[in-house]
Image (cartoon, one colour):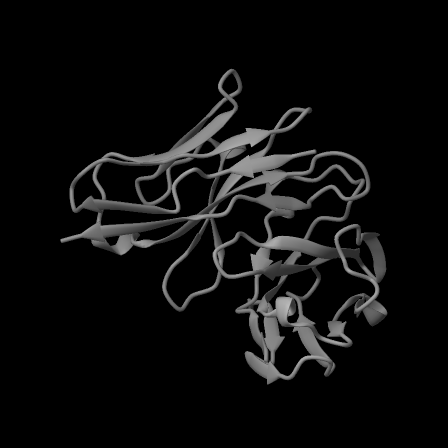
Length: 112
Length: 121
C-alpha cells in the first residue's frame, strides 16, 4: 500500500531563513510526487511536481529514491509562504491512475 | 477558465439526518474525485469517477455514502444517515486525464474546489 508521511505538523521559521518541509513515501513502483499548498482562505492548489523538475515561488523538491523522500526546500522563506503544505503520491497503476495519497500536512509559519 | 464549484460551502446537521453535496468540475475534465478531509489530516479519497463511471470507491463507506456523476459532468455525494465522525471538509477535484490513456503530465494535475464544511451534531 502506498503511504505518505510528513513528520512535522508545525514548522516555524523567520523571514529570510531556509526552510525544509519533510516528506517520506512508501510505494512499490516508480513514484510520482507532488507538493500541494493551501493558503489561508484559498483552495488547495498544486505547487510543484517532481517530474517537471521546476522551481515555483523559489521552492524546489528533489526526489531521493534511496531515502524514499521528497523534501520541499526554499533557501529564503518569505511571510507569504505561510500556508499548509501537503505532499502527495500519485497512483500510477491500474484503473485508479490519478488517485492521490496525501500526507497529513505541515503548517508553515514564517515570522517577520 | 472557471474553477471547480461546490455547494453548499457550509452545512450543519444532526446525526442520523441526510445531506447532499454538489460539485461542478472544470468543463471538459474527464476525471472527478471526492475527498474527505478530517481536521488535522490530509485529504482522503472517497471515490474517483472517469466520465460517468466509477473507477475507485474502495474507501467509500457504502453503507451510508453514495455518489453519482450523471452525464459525466456534475456530481453529487450523499450521506445517509450521518454520524458524528462524518464531520469534515468534503473536497471535490477534477483533472483532464482519463485513466488508461497516455497523456502529458499536466493532464493529471488535480484542480480542487473550495470544499464543503460539514458539521454533524
